[in-house]
Length: 488
Image (cartoon, rainbow, N blue to C red; front, side, top):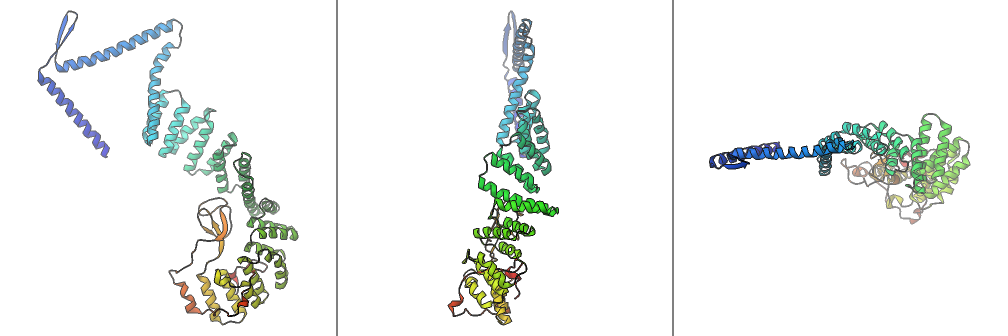
């Protein structure tokens, strides 16, 4: 609105200036004498200006006539394209000027002007690749995806610009939310240039978002073959995709292939916890419990994890708590001082009703690194040893405001997930979940739950005997038990 008013004001000022100048010339009384051969003309100011303009137009026409005469002369001498070049030359010059203006407008961010000038150049020039690309890019920058798609399609006719056209169509379809069309176009683009990294990444993202795990594995293989992915990273991501493919096959009741995919995922990445758990379950279903044990031990050696303990417990379902404790010793001895092992040992001892040994196994973990699980284990120990209900409730109340301990956390957006998955629910990142402590959420709450120990019960005083602080930890039962599930 401001620029429109400004332009109108400038126009009015110019008109007033011209009118004032014309009036001044008329009032000056000056004349211009013009002699042509024996004729003499006396012109007033306005007549002189008009005569000068007519002279310039006549001179331009004479030059054009001379140029046309020379063109006709060349045509009569055998140059069959002389006349066509004469008329095309001016058209091409205008087209190139429009093309340059469009490029300058696009560089300055004026997409509207860039489209207008590019469309003019498209009409004047016989350069469809150049003009279609310029119009499509300007339309894409302006957000006019329909126009961009029209002109990107115009690039598909020329082999030189076909790949660029497909790339532009992928972007435009994604902007319109047409992910199915974009994925199909990305497949075509990758067939045209298999080593193009940006296309590989785009197609891989679209395939994982649409849960096309087998297609994603093929794209990942292409990415590795073209040298854009280190071998160790490729094996890890291929294992993740194989694990997701296993889940998809299981959902379709194709259990034999699902188990094969889970075992393959574990072979590709033996330290990937979800893959080890899935492979162990598949091997147990096939009656290969010893192989399942080996799989869990290999993953446990890399890092203890409660899901591994759960899968290990499920290998032998019909065993007593003491038998289970003995079988778990092979795992517990690998990392005896790890927090997970100390809590796991305490849970196994609680299942065996050896509460003093469970207290020694837990040691001072509830003080040095208190977590919801460690404090709940303490509540179970107190209950098992016959402590007052007030003491048990005190431990449970304290667990309410304690840290939850390690969880599946996305390294990209820090979002916490209840279970592992290949794609983050929050940010859509692929293979970014890590088993670690979540961002600290402990501290005073709006409901003042930190006051619960004062309301529902009291904690026992620290024991004087230092011998109760030993070490080692476990978690047991046929199915994985988190401390929050223990009976208080």
